[in-house]
Length: 316
Image (cartoon, rainbow, N blue to C red):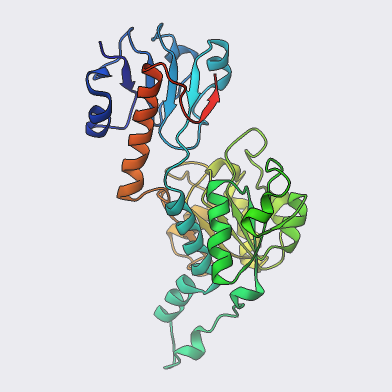
């Protein structure tokens, strides 16, 4: 009897079929015991379709589409799949940081607009040496920790803020640590966001957050888009140089809603061109990571069917 159902996104479940075999259902039914979820909103109405449901397993790390309160009330286990794509996301963050600190996109723009046969002279941007810059990571979990280690190897000074990590964790990362977010913002030349989306972090990056950042700082977000309150809060700081550059893999709305920052970026206005980098929420992706994520989610579903304790339990 088929007991596992993929709610959305996966059109060809060949990976899941190889692991789950006949347990994988092609349609929803009342016998389903485990849901594999991509973007589907899992709330009370959705769960009520499955009276025998034991667990929900999400592809990927974030679970802002999951109503955890309802799952707790119904004693349904929820697991995510965080242990994939760590290198892919951290490589993207490091790549974005190097792009902005070395002026790569800005030089590209300036080169297209050179005048009077001036080449280098027309394009020089005041940049700092990496060893003279401090990167502050907000959230030092798998991905944040990987970013810290990679940037340290390049030569950046590194530190992090994460109140949920035990004392001494900084020694494992060979990193500086601060006791408050305000302290991190005041000393960091580059701020990298690597926290999950929670009630605490939703809208955390607002105009007050930006004003506390060091003058000329760089902001990078490869975590969750809704951690940023309002993209337009960055317009004036970017124009004045309070913010030197921005890089986003994630946005508060995807695809992006119309807002002034996005519209100016689309139109490649002079003041923003090369200073803002946007990727379409793909930092997690490589062929290897995508396959690994699907395999791990399916194997976790099989553990549940086999009566074993699943990995990465969030609630239940």
